[in-house]
Image (cartoon, rainbow, N blue to C red; front, top):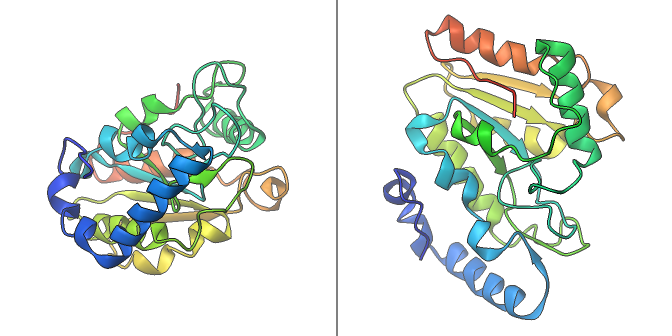
Length: 222
């Protein structure tokens, strides 16, 4: 089955035996055999493989993976090396520059370094059919990622949840533990970034919260 190589293995082992996940697995087997699906099947769980449960300091919640070739690799908003950063990611970099003075523009769009620094880059749906945004919604992924968020909510060490857009904000009801920080804003997409994403200052706010709780801050450079 799935092997994360860290604490997630024990925390989620029962989830992989539940009927909804077994149905999801059969759906994915068929999809990967017959269609072009992103990301590569070996990259689906990269975010959780890189960022173990107790290492999470912040969660950025995306929707579903990029559906263009060579983009998605298991981290929300991130693209593989050599791929031009999509507009949403460019807007994220602009906000980082304006908020904390780190300029990632003109480099690349691979956010793996954030994951290694304790940022869980989680999509609510972890796979997608090429060219068809949202094509794997309603197949079981939402239930799986709800469980991930519920487990993080149970953490006794404070962390920051960063929710951009309606899809991510819909998970806010799962975050009931008052020790955590929840930051919400519009999605960084060009369609909505000027409706509250630009100027949200989530990157400095996240680090201020971590610092107040004597936790290591996040280096938002790539």
